[in-house]
Amino acid sequence: METIPSSRIRSFAAAIPSSTSPSSSIFGLKRATRVPLTPRKFLPAKLSCHPKSRVNALMGSEDDRISSSSGPRATTISPVEEDSPLQALQYGSLSFTASKGTKDPNENDATVSIIVVGASGDLAKKKIFPALFALFYEDCLPEHFTVYGYARSKMTDAEFRNMVSETLTCRIDKRVNCVEKMDQFLTRCFYHSGQYDSMQSFVELDKKMKHHEDGRFSNRLFYLSIPPNIFIDAVRCASMSASSGNGWTRVIVEKPFGRDSESSAALTKSLKLYLEEDQIFRIDHYLGKELVENLSVLRFSNLIFEPLWSRQYIRNVQMIFSEDFGTEGHGGYFDNYGIIRDIMQNHLLQILALFAMETPVSLDAEDIRNEKVKVLRSMRPLTLDDVVIGQYKSHTKGGMSFPAYTDDKTVPKGSLTPTFAAAALFIDNSRWDGVPFLMKAGKALHNKKAEIRVQFRHVPGNLYNRNLGTDLDRATNELVIRVQPDEAIYLKINNKVPGLGMRLDRSKLNLHYAARYSKEIPDAYERLLLDAIGGERRLFIRSDELDAAWTLFTPLLKELEEKKITPECYPYGSRGPVGAHYLAARYNVRWGDLGADQ
Ligand SMILES: NC(=O)C1=CN([C@@H]2O[C@H](COP(=O)(O)OP(=O)(O)OC[C@H]3O[C@@H](n4cnc5c(N)ncnc54)[C@H](OP(=O)(O)O)[C@@H]3O)[C@@H](O)[C@H]2O)C=CC1
Ligand SMILES: O=C1O[C@H](COP(=O)(O)O)[C@@H](O)[C@H](O)[C@H]1O
Image (cartoon, rainbow, N blue to C red):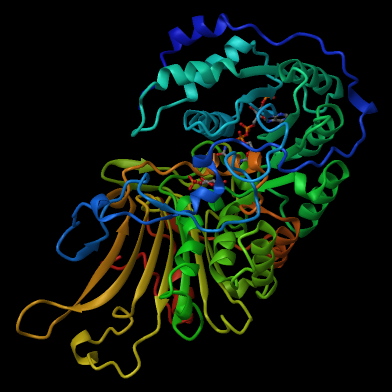
């Protein structure tokens, strides 16, 4: 990855004037507590970045295809360039294009200010600034955009630009003019230091923003990249002292959205003192991942899947998340939440809801979220019987020793917080009655992976049963959606081994993204930031979805804590506790990620 040399940035950044000029407007508490709601006022003029174009059907011409094969047993779909002929599909209600439809008089002149609250932190540096730069590089940000870092740390604009520049990289597949683009991006970055509960400081931020907005129609997007205990202070100050006077004001809220039903409801209630629901963008970055977004496309735009998508043909569905590292010094946050809250209650449950929902009326955000809520509300709350929890222990392998969770200095001694969990969930509706949805999530496991596995039923009266051997489960079709790494969608089928005999084999029909598309897959945060700017809420969590999600997990989480249930140990770097196998076996399921032929 190319990175801009920091020495050059330093001198360059210092040359850019800071924003300190006064503004003549009225600030602070005089403003109405409710910020104005003017969604979709800003319409970026870049069709290529439009959420609509992201679901364009890419129909590669014959010329786009190059033959490729990843081995004798893999049928790999061949590569296609993303610039191949497009066939646009109707998508959502958001009007976002410059070329069609009625034009807002302010469209080209509107400004967007993106305020990263907690700009000195880990998430801002790791994800938010790189994503904003990637959007800028791709010409997806509006003409008049400005990025403001806000945090307590003292920094000048030049120092802030320096810090941001260290976080930026150029895409592997696009290095053209990258350094110039970084320079241009950094000129749009400004910093404001202040406390998160200081109205005065947000008033001063507002002044800076007004100065740059220069009387234009202004839209403001606050990204709360701060610990949850200061969310409300920051929202109160931002909404009362720094919301837009004539455009929209939106707030991206990071998880955790509470620890249980009560604390989550309290957070929502407090947020709604200052914001309307449609100003709140609760982010779950898994919804921004390419293959999660593709789930609905796969199902609803291919005739062959939807008829099979029910208890009639599907034996079980598995949602699997694993990381090959532990908390490694960042156990402070994790220990208070544990793997069930960190991964299952949000990321995996969101995937499950998308997977299992009925066909929405349209691709409009509310239609999709309505269907997701119905799934969540049709599910049984989990009990202790439905889960297995684990915690990693130290392990020595090949002369290397790996620490236990409780060896982490930031974790309290004797902590019972689970770093692994497996769970069986059920959706009590006519489509999914009796189908186990198994989830598994863990840290410090043998690999880093996220995938969805759909195991189909046996073929009734299969003529080839004799040729399949005794393990009929192994011979059933399995659809795997590998969310990360090395994105792929593959279907395991049975076929005849070529030759005169009748021997059956198992092969993969494989849509392997790296082979099929030359373009790098954008990071989830890019998609989500772009959607928040465009007012597209489809990939953000609505408050009733959140309530329903907590309703499923809260009784279990309370019981685990009240009864001080001891997690089962598993060695760092292993495949997790054996209890997970017993849990699956109870439902006649085998985890698909553990076989030899994954
Ligand atoms: N990091 C990650 O990968 C992920 C993070 N998140 C969520 O995103 C948010 C931000 O995460 P992250 O960047 O890791 O958080 P950090 O702990 O890095 O905090 C961000 C900034 O907030 C300020 N801050 C930290 N602690 C306090 C405190 N106790 N009181 C007041 N200010 C404080 C600091 O800035 P300063 O001192 O300069 O004011 C810090 O730089 C959190 O809600 C987190 O749960 C969600 C998913 C992944
Ligand atoms: O939300 C979280 O996600 C990360 C994993 O995200 P990924 O995009 O790298 O798969 C996880 O490490 C973290 O614990 C959790 O809070």
